[in-house]
Amino acid sequence: MRALISVFDKTGVVDFARGLADLGIELFSTGGTEALLRENDVAVRGVQELTSFPEILGGRVKTLHPLIYAGILSLRGDPGHAEEMERVGALPIDLVVSNLYPFRETARGSGQDLASVLESIDIGGVTLLRAAAKNFANVVPVCDPMDYGAVLDELRGDDGGNVSQGIRRRLAAKAFQHCAVYDTHISGYLRTGDELFPDQITLAMKKIGELRYGENPHQLAAFYADSTIRNLPRGVVSGRQLHGKQLSFTNTYDLDAAWRIVADFSAPTVAMVKHGNPVGLACGDDLAETYRRALAGDPQTAFGGAVSLNRTVDEATAREIGEVFFEDLIAPDYTPEALAILQKKRDLRIMATGYQPERPGELEAGDLDFKRVVGGWLVQTRDALPENMLTRDVVTTRQPTLSELTSLLFAWRAVKHVHSHGIVLARGLQLVGLGAGQPSRVDAVDLACRKAGDRSAGAVMASDAFFPFPDGIERAAAAGVTAVIQPGGSTRDQQAIEVANRHHVAMIFTHQRHFKH
Image (cartoon, rainbow, N blue to C red):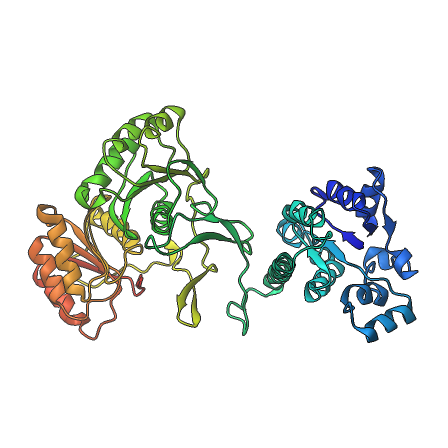
């Protein structure tokens, strides 16, 4: 048997090559891999001994030679192929070990010019892997150092040193996927910024791990990170689980939703999330007090949900959290005293994002959001409109007071994270009522007012989209709401304005909506 080894990531390759050599497999290699094996006293020969042709163009062309690819692609047992192999002097290659230049890492590096990035695009490695994977019935393709041990076990097995067809096929699929992800990174880098939606698009994902189950226990699930993102945003995807049971699909979803909310605020912020919606939210100066105000929004619904904070959790706040049953907790970090308190809660999953900038986790407008439909995907840019682009068009006779305006802007930022129809009632920097996912907007207003109860009096209201009828404004005014922020744009806007004026309610049109299905 012959093996061709040409790798950039040399993790474990010396031991693997030595194991192959001990089995009597003849080794051929290139450049740095060959030098490393020789330094470690592994018997290896250069690929030029197969091709009688040296590396050229500064190493750009090493393995791209007909005798190499004849050795990989020839069908064993085919008389015609055997005759041609003999005629041209090609030798069969039975195992190909290759991984690729670090294009993604180079492209992410600071100060890299286009020429340097292009130089990191692998040609020979991709071609070797694709050829070996195509002919996996005869050639073993290996692209992941994690597979070295399994391949050696197969070669040392009782089956005459043969790698089973099942493993060969799995390794072939892995090699093609490895190349597809690699090409996705390259195409994403080369695509210009104004080409958000090309005619064809591929996703490159790296598995973070298996999840406990999907939305229901009978559903299987896994968690993947988008490996095309140059600077992976902090949150669940890049966080560390410090305590608790394995995450499920819904745990992960709610933790992400909770982190997105607090990451949208610069002041110390606490949010409670249930089924993707903020049922408690507050901003403040003291974290423990802010937590208490967030919980007061709807303590009954917050029970068993996810809680998020955009500041390091201190001992006082940890003691407050420990008084309530939550399933999930996410924050940038925890003091040792806080973590010791929280880890006493056996069923609490604790996540740390390790990130605490002025605006943690803020999304860029160019990020794409994907939603699955049967047989396809919906793709859009994220709802991440810069705050300085927010229109504040007062359309009523009465202007909002400064206090009302502060609450309105807080509510407008909060309602962005509410599933439509979305209504938020706020007093100060505290959510006091929520109406989410209702089939009509007036139902959402009614739900928010009922949740707020007496706190509706003097509260402000944000709506993620316009009011198609003035009844929503009527219901809010009857509950004591004093100011409203909404996109406007309904054919009945004037009726809504008239109702607001009649009840001395100030109203702002943003001319932009935050609809979230």
